[in-house]
Length: 131
Image (cartoon, rainbow, N blue to C red; front, top):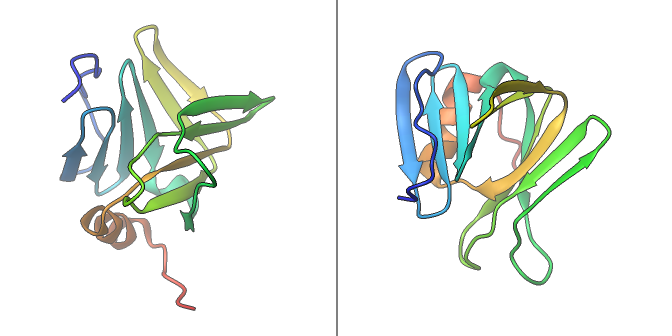
């Protein structure tokens, strides 16, 4: 685990699953999803998730944060064999070394394994639409 992760002190709901890699992590509770990166955590209430859709990166895997007015996007670099998803959310809260700050609409692109997706689906109320 990366030594610069900010320790997660509180999380809404009951902890269900936490998955940490060397440069990112995801924690899921019955009410919240937390996306961990070195020096920053993003708290997302499951009720604020609008959609989760598969994402295919074109070219290199990347790591970026872009901000256009109040719309934010967060991307994480991954290996080519990892399934990535784009999450659209109504609101998120950023927790960094300066404290907590609410964010407006945001999108995230990061890998989620099947177990994490199952837990998010179970507690968020989102339904899968099959092709």
